[in-house]
Amino acid sequence: MEEIQLRHTNDLHSHLENWPRIRRYLQAGRAGQRAVFNFDIGDAIDRFHPLSDATLGKGNVLLLNTADYDAVTIGNNEGLGMAHQALNRLYDQANFPVLLANMLDQSTGQQPTWAEPYRILTTAAGTKMAVIGLTAPYQETYRSLGWAPEPAADTLARLLPTVRAQADFVVLLSHLGLPTDRALADQFDVDIILGAHTHHLLAAGERRNGTLLAAAGRYGDHVGQVDLMIDDQHQLLASRAKAFPVGDLPTEPGDAAEIAAWWQEGVAIEEAEPVTQLAQKQTVADQAQACLSALQSFFQLPAAFCSTGLFLKELPAGPVNVYDFLADMPHGINPMKITLTGQALKALLQEMADKGSFLASQRIKGAGFRGDVFGELVSRGLGLNAAGQPTYAGKVILDDQQYALATLDHYRFFDYFNMLNDAPAEIHLELFLRELMAQYYQKESQQTH
Image (cartoon, rainbow, N blue to C red):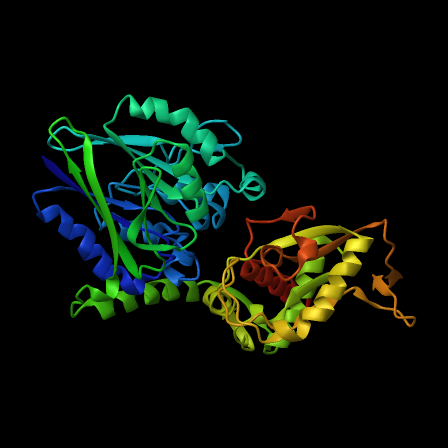
């Protein structure tokens, strides 16, 4: 009989305040007699943290190097939060393999050089475990960054016969979300799915059609563990999953200083990078108006909208640096041009009028937002004429005409504005809001001197 243990993390999102305890837990597995394998299931990186932002995630990779991971896969924060070339270089110094079976480089049609679709890991007793990595295949957004994603089910249908022929059992590193994990368990012969993406916590795992599902929540608040019993013919006899709070793990005296040092390292790098000189302070309301101007200029459009909750603090008069913009706008939010029929645009304006008061103080999470409340909706180039008719750039909106708006992609991913859900969109994932705003203020400063 052989015992194998899988230890796993997911959706850390650069919440490094839990990292010292997680690192020790992962390292400690190597001390026992059983075979222990460590995995991360993606979204380890989130550029709200100054070290992650300043190093474009490479600082996170160096931290992951210290935890003895046997393999990781990527999440959408790695895949969509980085420009194509930045992702190509992200894992240059990694001491672990990146497993990613359902993403090709669009320009070559080949596997990215920094990833492999699967790996066969072998224990000292000779048991072979096939490990496959899959990430959520956002078709529209990944393609805009030069990646060609493949649906998870198509990838598994293609790969499983190959890996089954080489291994005694199969583990899937799935940054796909719990609903997809359940659907794949119903459809395919996979022994264990280590899950992520939807931030779900399976404290004792979940069994589905002979597959054991496991997941450890988000932000490093839990770690996961799967214990396996293997017979002398290397067949999987029994499996058990659990996730337990990182808060139950012991701290050590140097933890707080180490956590603070990572933050300060990123701050120091970004504070040393000047952006521009502001002639006067920019209040939240001022920044919302500047955002409208920046969006109009970027897309060369007469109409734009955004919300004040995007801006967390005032920008001071005088010199401002990269960290000032990160602290003010820590979001993973990108510029977007949306195209609507006149009829849909009028419906959107009605939605905005109906929900504006509610949204002003509505606390929100997700869709790249790293702030507190949605805030006040502000717009330019949209309004009503003297007769009360909706207008675009001062002209009455006609139902059968097409109208383009400059805005931000996270409005598309909330349920508040139904008219944005399926409308044609052009999203610039290579540019975060804070970078758009920095460029706008730089240009404004140059024009006044």
